[in-house]
Image (cartoon, rainbow, N blue to C red):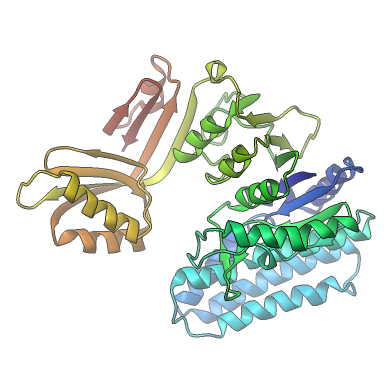
Length: 421
């Protein structure tokens, strides 16, 4: 048993979807659980639907949803050759459910409606790919992962109930392989015990695949991307990046923690628990070696690893009465961040101040300022970058920071972080 995950980039054109089919066909004897993301930029477009709906701009939301519908119908027609296939009824059902949501008044939280609407992307892509595969002789079974992944109701970042989900996979998923070698499921989404759709965090399809790999005791998990493998920096931001042939679980977790958009942060632990290797391969050329992520990879051979997070905000909290910010006050501050579900990307405290770097989410920052203002004075800078370099070399950090103002720096034997303006 192997688990494959194909992301949105692998489905953004008819040609690439055919290429995905060719990759799957090259494993004719393997039992494959295939996790698929939304096509192309569909998730981004559905986020706009959710935002406009919540702002009560229903006509705009409805038009955006209609555009998404037509795009997927066109893709399905191009792949299947006609519009009489049963898949079009299934697609229509998905869109009807989304239209019902748009017909409601937004009385619940934005995160709730976000999940009901944005989860549509994975349902559409998997249904279309499954139908295309079956028509071209790649026999498979389509699975609605919401019938399997049980979660809490922490919308937009739901937590999986491992015991219930394991039972569901044992009872509902494993038997499917008695009739077919291939099962296709959605990434990124799940369901509460009230049958409400949830998402597992942005880019959560990697994590979905890891959950399946863990619970199916898979031989390996492969993430198929449009790059040769993991690189030491984002090639869209930095020239002359270096491929990494192998890397340890712990090092990838560090990269993800610092903001590298390589692997979803939750992905590694389910694999590490059962020592399942994670392969990152190129779907544009499946014969390239890619990257192997495993427990005992040698980190001494790694090049400098560079991570740059954009659109950051530096917030400084100062006690109004000049009292030291010690454990009790830090605890109070942490409690506020935790309650608002705000992740701190970097933090530093002095005698009477506490500074932290966070992602720029205007809605949450407004709530944060309101919550802190009663007891603290606040100052913040926005439009910043957080630069992290692991295994840094002399001169490299200054080269990367050239022409920028360093607002804050932290340094250890292995890692340097700078907030840049």
